[in-house]
Image 1: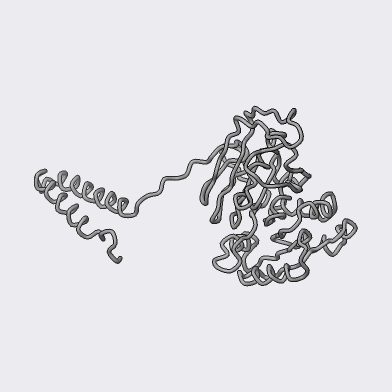
Image 2 (image 1 turned 120 degrees about the vertical axis):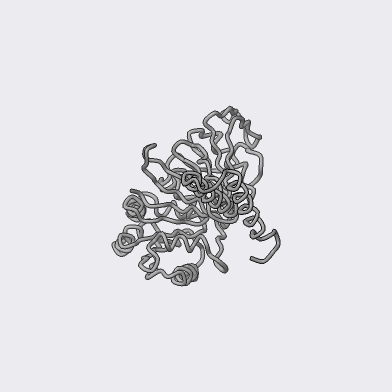
Length: 328
């Protein structure tokens, strides 16, 4: 079964609760995690790896190793391949996604990342490292809410998430228009925009509905899904940088806790939340009813006295319940 994908929209919390990074380390094996950091997209030097090394070790990871090819010729070095083969978690940093794609796509390093994913290793990436996980990725482009011709360019990603294009820093940098432009020009693709400090966690499951890819959201922002299956557009005739007609696209905005079936392109209904106080009242009432049935069967009480007993029991339960604002 393929391992989970963690698609992080950038600027993930590194100072406080670190919920997303904590979940990544746990998925990689916790205290036995052997994590490979790929910082090829970054313009920073060793300090970027030092930051993630400290963060992952603080969360209990056993080992953090750097794999940093800086040219395609380096992306076949045996030492890098060996490090990836030993990994239980792979993390790709932010930076320039086109640089990351140009250096590793189609190389032994890329093939080893894909192989690790297929054998169950968790693969995570933030910002540029998020975009490259899909079959198509945003290479570069401008922000804005209105889709316009030539607003952005698309390049090939690693393809761990098929028939999808991912954009990051989505709400913070107003990237709605460019994702709309891409799905208007390529309606076979599902558009996914991920906000900062937010992760789209994609897991493969097999159940009575078959094998599916399910997405769940973790973090303070949202994941925006654009489904252009019923698209009406003029993108094939729009000139230069004019606005594009994009009608019929189904929009899903998914906050933390929401789940989405990527295979069927449908929202997964959430399970109803149960109020603990209500549940305890129902349980107590059930106990009273069972006792009433036993008493009636034994013939030692009249129905009217049993009703009075049940009423007193419910009244005492309401009096015992804490009022709103009372300390518990």
